[in-house]
Each structure stands twice: as structure tokens, then as C-alpha cells.
Image 1 (cartoon, chains in turn orange, purple):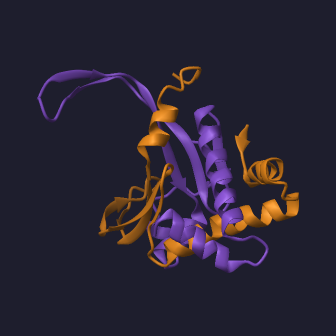
Image 2 (spheres, each protein chain N blue to C red):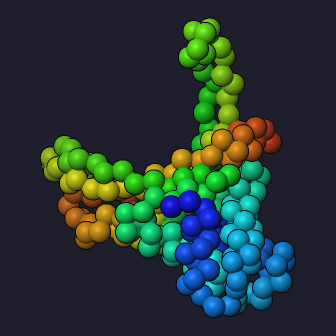
Length: 100
Length: 110
């Protein structure tokens, strides 16, 4: 069981009275916009939640795990997410978990 | 870009909602994600990525100011795994299948 775009759209419906179509559009627009901005090299800091940041990685040696063939891992830009102190504090005592 | 700049940017992109509605909607979206994680639930957003919790076992740490040794209890930390489309958009180049180290099952759990 996991939360998806549809589940978030439902929350927008329940809490703001948007209909499900409007909610879905807004959720799509939210994530598409984050993706577009990150794609344009813009990092985004959402206070109270966390920061989506970009890191440029240099080329490094790699290996095809199946064939063991050595292939360089090309230089690339990657997204990282740094959760805010507030979010970290909220989830750290997720004590009810059975995953331990 | 800050949250308020992002709200501004989104508000200009559409005509149905004004700034304060977009502001509220973004807070509902972020709270949905944070609430799910707090309940130990995964969040899977197709074409963007997934949020989940990672377990960190108890460890011995040090107070950087006093140098005092302290025990840091086990905990969960939020983790974000970018989806395939986000990785490609950010990297701006076609992923080279030969050198791609990522295991491309976007929605598979770890």
C-alpha cells in the first residue's frame, strides 16, 4: 500500500473542495513543474519539507555486473533530496514499524 | 528557488487558482507526503520518483563542540529515489544503456 498521485488528488478534494479532475491536474502540474525546473538546473527548497538539489558527478570506472566487462560510468547530473529537520524529526520515531 | 518563488511560478502557469489557493494546495500535497512517511507508508509518484523510509541502526557519535561521546539511537530517515524520467530530464542526455548503472525498475521497492 503506498500513496500515489490519485491519493494526493483525493486529499486536495477532501481539504480544498477541488474536484478529482482538478486535483489530479494540480498534482500532475506540481510534480511536472519540479521536474522541469530541476531539468533546467534549478534546485528547489521547500521549507519544512526538504530541498531537491543537483549534483554533477564526474566519470568513474564501472562494470557490467553480468558480463564483468569494464565500462566507464559517464559524467552525469543527478538529483538528491535533503529532508528538512522538521521532516526528519517527524519520521525518525516511526516506532510502530515491523521492518526492523 | 524557494517555496514562495515556486508557488509564484506555479500560480502564473495556470488560470484556475490564485496564489493563495496554490499556496494551500502545495501545503496539502507536501503534508500528504510527509504524513504518509510518518505513518511508514511509501509514496510513489510515476515519472518523478518515490519517497520511503530508510532504517538507520543505533550508532556512537560525538558532540562536535564538546567532543563528548554520545549514543545516537536507531531511527528512520526520509529517502527519495528519483524516477527514470526525472533522472533523464536532469541529465539532459539519452541514457547510455551500456554504461547505465541504475537498475531501471522505477516503481520497484528496494
